[in-house]
Length: 324
Ligand SMILES: Nc1nc2c(c(=O)[nH]1)N[C@H]1C(S)=C(S)[C@@H](COP(=O)(O)O)O[C@H]1N2
Ligand SMILES: [Mo]
Image (cartoon, rainbow, N blue to C red; front, side, top):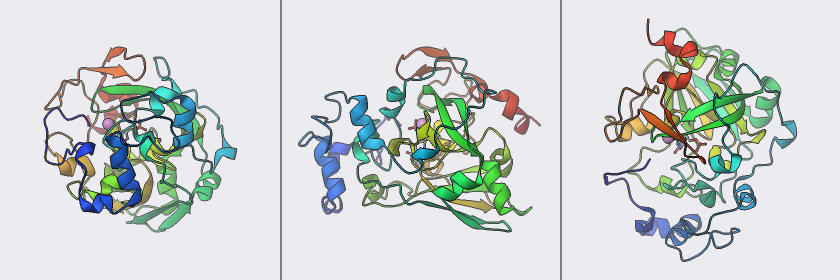
């Protein structure tokens, strides 16, 4: 998130100087990179804000091999952007992933993140709790490609082809109990590879939550890929949520745990700043963020502006959940 007002937890990266950070190789390198002492490892002269990275450098930083042989998956042509698709590089070089960096150039900080092997445990109020590795996911579910718009609460937006499958298919395998009212999703926790997790001003691990009804909505995807290949690290490898009618912070990355509960779970941004980031977080042009308008949005790359549409344009699929 871009802070116009400085908050105690909004530490600029170049003020990260405490001992806990220095005690760890990755974090120390991030700090040195951020103040321009060294260039990003494997990236030529690439301090933040200096030289623009090439697509090859961005790919080298983020690429994940596991599962690659399965791609591409068939496109579901029920879904269309209604605008130009975002250029792959524009999406890959401008991402939000606070575990690694508060900058958008997350790809410069993911070197030590190894999303292989990976396991997602599905637990809580269900008959048949189960842990899936990535192989299980590719084998047990019918994956497809979908063209979705994505709208960040900060007003940037993009149109990207995700590969994934409905979250409801995963829930069907574990058989939720009638008492399950919410689904809580949690990101990995490993402060050694994700240095921002050393800051306890943030409510790590990143977590999100949706109602069981939202989780069952066929638009809600668990994504393993983007642009016809496995998710690069900075996009949330190897498996993330995609909730296209909600602000982007709901679309939690690099998920390790999915839990069925009977209570609304605490979530990362809602815990940190409850007046700015609601639990429901449906895209709505008429409800301004306390610090900016949500009436328009701009596309990554072209910077073209569009009016924001309620539910990000997915009202036909989701409005009935909120208007009854
Ligand atoms: N674990 C985790 N998931 C996250 C975030 C994050 O910081 N950490 N940022 C969120 C925000 S604010 C947005 S807009 C989307 C961005 O997805 P993208 O970077 O792949 O475009 O990821 C969301 N998921
Ligand atoms: Mo976002």
